[in-house]
Amino acid sequence: MRQWLIPTRLLCNKHLLGEHVEHHMFIGAINKGKSLQGYLIKGLLDPKTLQSRHGLIAKEMLLRDFKHNSPLPYAKCKLKGKVNIKANIKELAKRCNECRKRIERGSK
Image 1 (cartoon, rainbow, N blue to C red):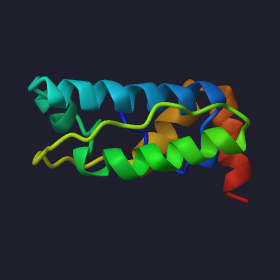
Image 2: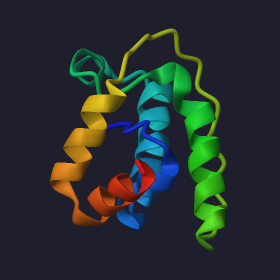
Image 3: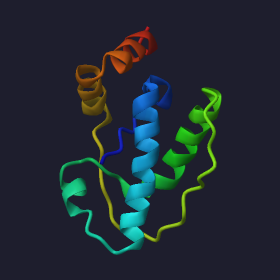
Image 4: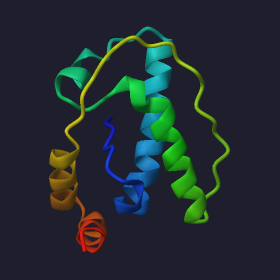
């Protein structure tokens, strides 16, 4: 699980929907009191951005004609994290050809 936190338009459909699902998983883990330390240490999560990022993802999903009927439950979380967005752009470009094409088009 991770938050990419890159501009949503740069994510392919698979990664857009994947990050959406993972937001729900993170909120579920928070609400169940599970530890997220590993994600925080590895820079894979910034809990303070879960609500706003979910909104951006939902908006992008609708722009791509996907349905969105899963509001993100509220989670009280005082954890702080930091995600390296520049590193995530590079990592995603290596992992996924479709994202790489979107990233290349988006940087022009």
